[in-house]
Image: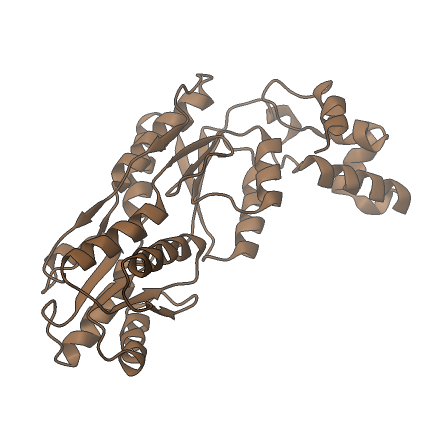
Length: 344
């Protein structure tokens, strides 16, 4: 919103800080009832009025409240969580902990999955904001400027997680993906590895880990890291196929860092099927430390994230804000560790 738009909106804004339909009406220069018709029944207004109201909606980031007007000021005792996926998910422990802590405090968790799709995330976010939950939990940083505008305009407490940024929307609990990539590279180089490869899915956080890994290897004077991008596929078979492609291009590879434990399990499975000794010939490192990888043979070396801590802290933040308390430290870095096991 432009500064002039903000000044106009301040005069009619609710105590929660949310942009209201009255703000939209004032900015569009129409009566609130006319703005309501333009938003809810556009066929009842002229094309000129409709354009003015839609322009104001776009400028303010306003999302219609789908809850009945008389209930708009009530607390829903509902928290919404947005995750990419829950299939063999690194986020599962965080969501379980968040849910348990919220339930104990009398709140319910509504879960939505984006499937790593920006379009689905946008549609899901609009639906969530329109229902006015008491808080929103996001896995990752909201990259979309449109999404950020909507969340800021909603006045709903927001926790971003599983990442770090100096400019969060509201509250943030996470860790540095660049630091992970660098530390894994240094860990493998300290093991005497010299020919490196990456297996990664197509998502922004995995890309940052990969770039930091490549940078650390290049800085140490080793050959360029071979990168196999599996795209949207995040399956065990994707990992198996990735190792096959890697071996065709770099048969002397002796260390592979994967963007998820599931992909690492696939790489490990294919290596064993080919008779490649792990870790003697090939070191494999995953990301996430999901259940069961510690009990594999060989056990998977991976990056451990304190997922439970993220869920617990997020619940404290959201419950506190829903109850009107201020948050003194709105950015929390939970860090990470490398769980060294038999695969590396």
